[in-house]
Image (cartoon, rainbow, N blue to C red):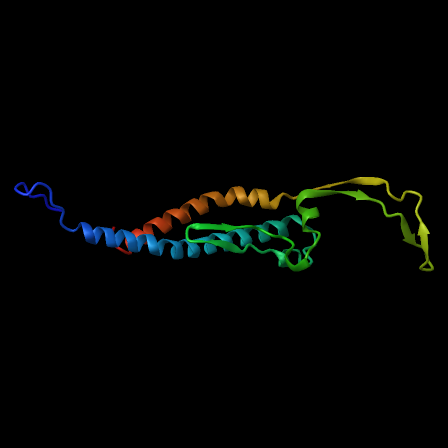
Length: 160
């Protein structure tokens, strides 16, 4: 920008700056979605690893994990689901914990249903692993870094 004294104030190059800023703002949502995918993939990878280390038998427990990205422009959001398509409908029991209740009936040695004397009684409580909460707290710095990369990449591409 140059300022000339004789004509008051004249800005040279202001239109180019406006065009570059508009192009950077237009490009930012595409970059944001790419960075959000990277953070989502890291989150899912870490939570799978954490769950497999805490649960004795995986039995495809992590196969139903999903985290679709939705929204337009910069207003993106991703929600974790551990029970996608009914693959593991018991995920919430493992995550949040559950009470162990004895069944009312059982099978005897001949395969016949027999009523249990302790049916319906609470036997104990299995605490949840709280993996989603733990990983959500650990992913915050990575998400902040991703948003800084969005800013830097969109401005860098237009020499701003």
